[in-house]
Amino acid sequence: MQATLIQLTANRSQRLTAALAAAVLLCTMAMVWPYSTVQASAVLPFMPIFATSVVIAEGLTAYFLATQYRISGRFVFAVLASAYAFTSVAAAAHLAVYPGVFSASGLFHTGRQTAIWIWLLWRGAFALFVMLALAIRSRPPIGSHDGRRWRGALAMGGSIAGSIALCAAAGAAHDRLPNLVASAGPYRHLSANPAIVSVALMCIAALAVHAYVTRLRTLMDLWLAVALLAGVVDIVLTLGAGARYSVGWYAARIASMVSANALLGMLVSETSRTYLRLADAHRTLQALSVRDGLTGVFNRAYFDERYPRELTLARAAGYPLSILLVDVDHFKDYNDALGHLAGDECLRRIAHTLAASLTRQTDFVARYGGEEFAVVLPACDPRVGASTAERLRQAVADMKLPGPSEKTPYVTISIGHASSRSHADLQGATLLAGADAALYAAKASGRNRVEHEQAG
Picture 1: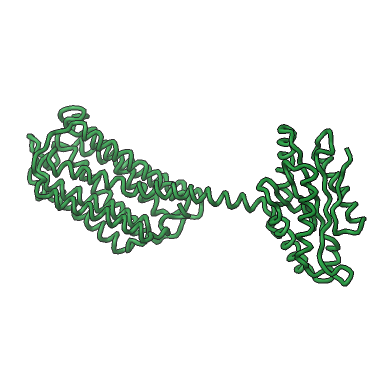
Picture 2: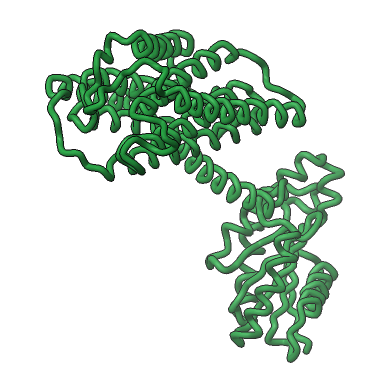
């Protein structure tokens, strides 16, 4: 996820997916409505499965949104996290008191009306939290980490405590609250009850205001709208169901599960995409960290790390290893005559030519320092190493880069070559010293040549 989901604009594909989800919800509601009062089989395990999935989904959504709040400091995320924390607790309480799950009338001696009143609190509170989030949406981020911590803890703790208190009050006052469900089980005059009508209007208003204020521009806004729409479908189908375990009742519970999981699905998807982007960024950063900023070939740190590793592999496998030290001839004169910018371009072109002239994937060239390069040739005997060195020297000569003076009309390189075959005891420093001595001999002999170290 980016710095804040509130700025993550939804693309065309994501809008189509959300639109399809909304269309499926509305079409399902339209198809189920004529049969909503048809009584179906009472699948007793359905209610625990439904409520448990909602508790987990809304709890996870609260956690993800709280994480977004800690990252961004936008209090709107704390409010939305509080909304999902409230409903997660309410869903757990709804399951605990639901008739027929743990006991005939629910736990805590609450009675048959408590479950539906907790359901009303669940739906109504979620709509109110969304409206509050819209009201504070434009507030700037909270800069202080201490301020974020205590405000977030206050919001989350308050919503959880409030949910527990309201659910407990609904259970304690079950005999004083209006009777919504008849003793035999069917809903009685539910659609005419002011409480359910008020909650239904609140949910519809929350969806409408959310769509109007946000214009559903961002990914979070888009899927929060789907969650609100699923909540409205839940209420509508519950009103039309007429009784528990009817077709409409089952469809309403499924819509409630969609409402709980809509935003969570987006958050999980964006988290996965973030890890993929993070992995790509890490690979890019890792590649950049081992490259020389000027020439683009590997840098000295990479050489210092890989060269000993290649030596260890050569010892273990018993194959030879060759190393070339390359120096650009008269490079100080080149910089003095043509300037450092031209000198930088010269080094870039030479580095590119050296790298392009290597034919095996195991070979590599690194900038060793200044105008010097090191070429490591694993599993390469002295004869092949010598021919490779000559090929590199000729490739640079064939470029015919203008030199610094009439005495040196073209840029050339000198190369010192050393092979592990020349040493009974293969040591990295010894091999480098041999290549360096050969390079010194090449420069002393007139430059633009390859010299080989054979001592050992």
